[in-house]
Amino acid sequence: MQPRPYVCGWCGDRSPGAEGLEARRHYSLPPEENASGEITFAVVNVTGHLRFCEHCNYPTFIETFLQRPELDRQYPPPSFGEPLPGLPADLGTLYEEARHCMAASAFTAAVMLTRKILLHIAAERGAPAKALERFWTALEYLFTSNTVPRTYASWVDRIRDLGNETNHRIQLCTKEKATDSMAFTTMLLKVLYVLPAQASSSR
Ligand SMILES: [Zn+2]
Image 1: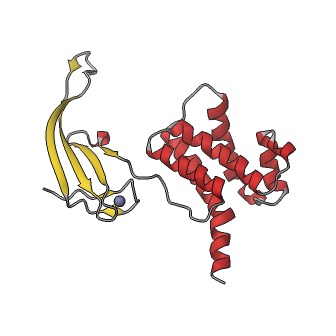
Image 2: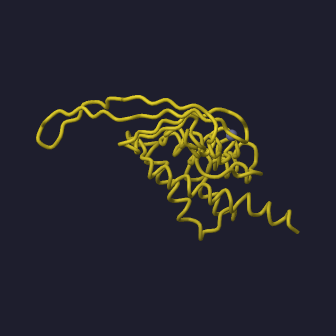
Image 3: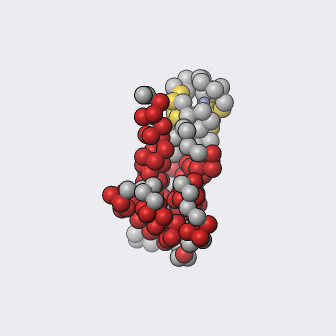
């Protein structure tokens, strides 16, 4: 049995995937119409790998598609992005929820969570109830209270725009947009909470 390295979705560790089970099968993809109008049925060779993490011992199932690697899947999938230890409780929970959404390909839900994270940052930094009634006044509070320097306005605008698109228009969010929104949210949380905590603990 070949080792099948992977990132464990349970503990986040990179496991060499040396121990486990393997099964092979053939799988027919749904019929597709090619450019000349012919209906084709593709059969691919699928290998199912059951692997046990060397760190936490939990099992992970990985399916690899020999001719169609873009279809490869892992259950549970690896978490998206990096953990941010030391966030205030609610923000930590929302950020972890957003990471789980990304891992589960729930991109629309992830973008709506990043929008909610901005609101919670404003609340955590003392925004009055009136400012929290509307999304734009909560964002304005982030700047007027100097929670977020104006130089980061473009980050906040990007999260806001993607969140508004998702929240107010009848459309789903793409993986690319959700990844963008998560990247900006992660940077913002790092600048506001993680880096100041690291700086004060290293004094
Ligand atoms: Zn693990």
